[in-house]
Structure formats: structure tokens, C-alpha cells
Image (cartoon, rainbow, N blue to C red; front, side, top):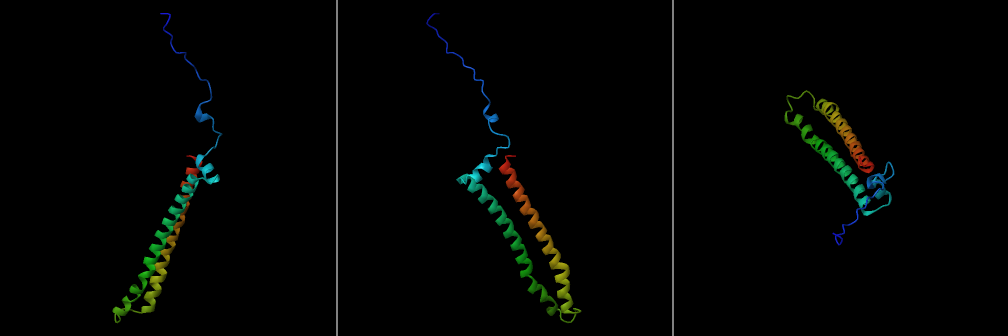
Length: 126
């Protein structure tokens, strides 16, 4: 049929869109560098996760230290059977509180570093 014209096919031979970016291009990093609204959101999310970790740690330590007066009142309740109230206080502080504080501090540092690693992975686009 002479009046039947098919549309002409075009072949595009360019570089694929995913290949146009420079190696190591990270969209999140450029958003932060350019101080866009999305970049501010990324930074706020890191700050929020670090704040959540800090508040959890402070809450744990406040609970630990806040209950110490109640614990130190126990020898007074059992005045006759306790060997020495001062020995009890030193034992609680030395063998109970300090190891728990050390473990809590260690947990906090590991958690904060993990938050930062996760944030860097987000920035690098991994």
C-alpha cells in the first residue's frame, strides 16, 4: 500500500544515564555540601539518632545513680546484721556502680560510632 507509512525507528546510541555520573558521586554528600533542604534532613537524622543514643545512656545512668540512696539505706534497715554500712557503700560503688558505668560508656561509644558509620554509608551511596 502506497499510503501506509510506518513511523521511522530511531536508535539512540548514547551513554546510559547511570554511566554519566563521575565515579564516587554520592548524591547525599552533594546535598549536604550544597546545604539543600534534603541535606539538612540528612544531618538532622544523624543528630536525632545521636541524641536518642545520648538520652538512653543518660537515662540509664540516672536510674542507676538515682537508686543508690535507696540501696545505701538498706544497711540502716538491717542495722544489727550488717557488718559495716561503710563497707557496704564502698562495695556497691566499687563493684556495682563503676563496672556498670564503664559498660554503659562503652555501649554509648560503640553506638555513636555505628550511627556515624551508617551515616557515612548513606553519604557514599552504599
